[in-house]
Image 1 (spheres, rainbow, N blue to C red):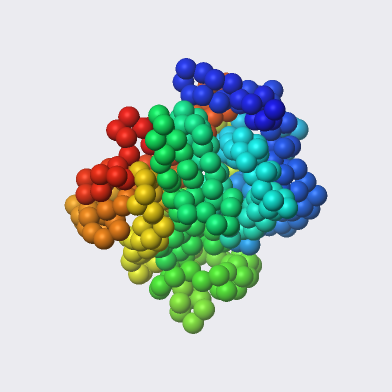
Image 2 (image 1 turned 90 degrees about the vertical axis):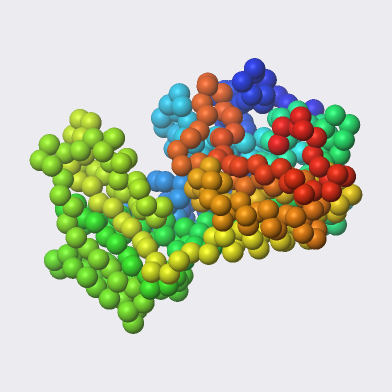
Length: 414
C-alpha cells in the first residue's frame, strides 16, 4: 500500500489533508528518502552557523550555499520536539506536501531500473542548485492528483521524458511543462544572497548593540556573491565605532548607509512592525519585547541603481518551455518564481499582457494551451486543523491563439 494513502484524508474543502497525528511519520519518511544521516549532519552545521552569527531560526536565514530544506527541517525539529503549537509553521506545511508527493509517486519512481528513481530524487533534493526545481515538479504533479486528475505520471523522474508531467482528465491526456525561477531571477539582487547578508548583519546588531538601526546597501549594479564576506567583515568592524554614516565599499561598487531608527518611548506593536515590510528586499529584527511591544527594531534594505530584468528572465523561461511542448496533445506551461509575485497587478499592465500575447501567437507558441505564472505568497497560508499545500498567487493565461489540438478542456482545474 502506498504510504501516502494512510497519511491523507479527504475533506470538502480540499482533498488529501494531513492530520497533525501523521506529521512526524510524514517528515521522517522525507528525511529517510533524502538520506537521514546527511540531513542530521547538515542540521548540525546549520545550527553551528546560526549560533556563530546569533541568527534567529528562520527558513530563509542560511548561507547562500546551504540547501533550503535544512532550515525547514530544523524548524520542524524545534516545533515538533519543543512547542508543537496547534498551528504549525508554514514551512512544516511545505515539508509535508513534499513528503506526500514523493510518497504518492513512490510506486512509479521505485519501479525504475537500478534504483534510478530514488537516486534521482536524492541527488536533486540534496543539491542546492536543483532542489527548488525538483520540489516544484513534485508539488505540481501532486497538485493535479489533489485536483482529481487520474492517472498523474511524474515523467520528470525519467531521463528520456518529453514532458515533465502527464495527466489524464476525463479520459484526455494533458502534458505539463514546469520551469522554476531561482530567488532573485532577473533581479539585480539575488534573494538568497540578500537573506544571508541581512540576517548576518541583523544578528550582529542584536548581539553587539542596544541601538535601533536602519541599514541600506546601495548597489551600483548587482550584488555579487564574491563580495558578501568582505561586506560582512566591514560591517562587523564598523560596529566598533559610531556606526552612523555613509561608507563606500568594494571600490565604490556599493554604498552602506547606516542611520538611527527612532522608536517611541512606549515601543511599537507587532502591527506597526509589519507595516515596515514594504520593499521587496527588507529584513527586520524586532526584539527587547515587553508585553506586546517592541523597544528595539533594526532593519536592513538593499537596492540597486540598475533596473531589474524580470521580464527578460520570464521570457527566456517561456521560450525554453515552448521548445519542449510537443504539439501532440493539450499542454500546460507552468512557471514558478521563488520570489513574492503580485501577478494580479502585473496582469493589469498593458505591456505585460502584450508581451504574453506576442510570444504565444507565433511559431511554437501556438502549441501552448495554457500558461500559468505563480510566485511565493507574501503571507497567505491555509490552516483548518490539517496540513494542506499553501495557496500560491498566480495568474492563468488561456492562449486564444492555441492550435485546437492543444487546448485544455474548459472544465479542467488548472
